[in-house]
Amino acid sequence: LSFTSYAQFRLLLGVPPRPAQSSASPPFQQFDARCAVAGALIGPLAAIITTPMDLVKIQMQQANQPRTLAAVRALFATGGLAGLYVGGPVNVLREVVFGAGYFGAYEFTREKIGALPPAASIPIAGAVGGVVGWLVMLPLDTIKTVQQSGSVRPGEVPRAVDIAARIWAAHGARGFWRGASAAFLRAIFVSATRFSAYEWVKIRISGQSG
Image (cartoon, rainbow, N blue to C red; front, top):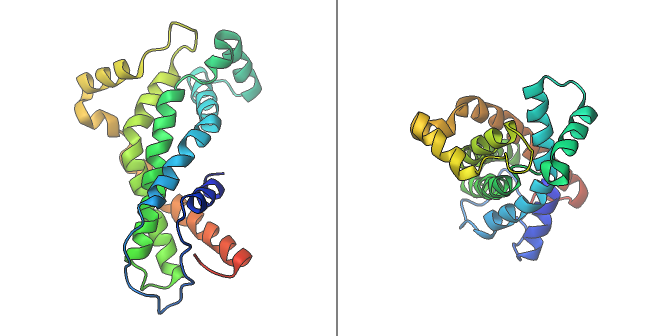
């Protein structure tokens, strides 16, 4: 969904396709900021899916509930449809900044190391995109996780600003980046693989790497 949506938003924003690359690719060209905008536009669409998915996963972990359907039913019974979207506003913002950082950093790095062959430039740029995406997203992810860990009953859901204030009071700025090392390490491998697969599919379909 994210990669397909990104490609469509690039087209809508008029971002020209990257010319076919080879081992003799041209050096760095100016980065097109519309790539980051296209990535950001994915956010609201992604949040429609990721908000309830993340909520169910977190609630299952909290309650040691092994059955997904049972967890969904319990959440719906407690909070209704709105209960399945607890943390939604924070998650929309989280997905927006992630998409901008993720795809923006990827495209910037691809251009910066354009002299390298695609077999090297794509996974490297993908890894950079993953790290940057998580770097800018992690504070919002921390707030969202805390918010989704509690009750989904109307009137009992803590406000995101209150959660942020508590984290700051207890741990300072570092509290928003707890677990960053593990997140970055995972992002390097996952994002390098995802972008490599995405670009490979594009090459197979269109016969070019941009």
